[in-house]
Amino acid sequence: MKQTNKLPVGILGATGSVGQKFIELLADHQWFEIKELAASESSAGKNYKDAADWFLSIPIPEQITEIEVKKCEPNLDCRIVFSGLDSSIAGDIETEFAKNGYVVISNSRNHRMDKDVPLLIPEINPDHIELIKKQNYDEGFIVTNPNCSTIGLSLALKPLLDSFGIESVNVVTMQAISGAGNPKKVKLDIDDNVIPLIKGEEEKMETEPLKIFGELNSNGITLSDLQINAQCNRVNVTDGHLETVQVKLKKEASKNEIINSWRNFSSEPQILELPSAPKSPIHYFEEDEFPQTKIHRNVENGMAVSIGRLRPDKFFDYKFVVLSHNTVRGAAGGAILCAELLKAKGFI
Ligand code: NAP
Image (tube, rainbow, N blue to C red; front, side):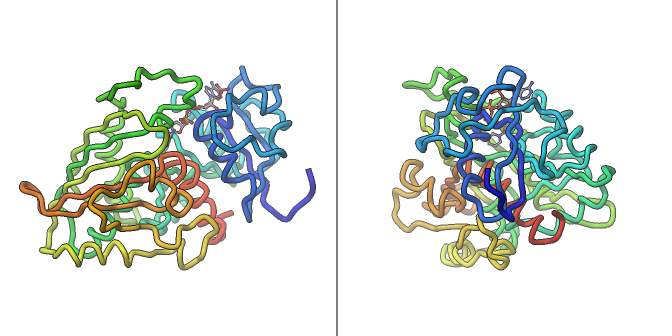
């Protein structure tokens, strides 16, 4: 591999649904260069093209195909590792990497609610990266990316919280197959079907935003008092989580004021012009039938959230539809944006 000034990075869980998206998004990244790939013992020792059941629509980037997949042990030749590990094993592996001086940016649930670990959406709570200083690893640290459905929802709620305050939220999700893992390996009975259970997802959607919207103080994060009720369903689409949301606001707001708060929303990643930051994190569509999963999941390379159908609600104040790409904004892309923020802020 030729020498560049880019920072070498590793991917833990490189063969999975999120791991493959990391490879696609990092293959030609301005600041980072893939140096190491790791996965389970059954993949270790193989070339990437033989280890991964590749399912993305682009071919495996050429420079990646022959990289040897390693075990997830902290002897990789890079300081930054992105983790797309299965949550049954991610917790201990990520801790071990942090203990050994690695910067771990994780998509798994295991460390998300740890007191001293940022649960980061760079447009919402960039100040939470200060929590890193409380971690007890010498040189290493862990930063987490929220659950994929939580990210779309939280981005939609943030401008409303800032402008009007929110009392309560009810959300129903329609989530893509790629959210369940590599679709070539995970067989879901999804043809002609909707599966009304995604284990643990509703709890994550109801609790993670409380930390994301929480206030940073000298003791850590004081959780937000927002009330959220969630119901999550798996539907037969490849990528993209669509959510129907009802909100009760603290202050009265007109439809135009709400739409303007979404359209004008911009934050630190946009000011810093981070390479993966969408120009506008939120796109509002006036067309009654939009957003639609197949049409809008890739808006701004899958890093923006699409919203539409804002209208009054009989029981709450308003209802609307939110769409975000689960493996891009909701996983690999979101984690890469976190790493870019950490670099821009001098943490790496
Ligand atoms: P996945 O397709 O099942 O991939 C899991 C990865 O973990 C594979 O690379 C697998 O390697 C590796 N792995 C499994 N057991 C291992 C072990 N004992 N030691 C080392 N590596 C092991 O899952 P995914 O959908 O990519 O999700 C990965 C993580 O991201 C999960 O925690 C998930 O909850 C989270 N997440 C997923 C999404 C999404 O949309 N998919 C979104 C946000 C967050 P092998 O191929 O070698 O088995």
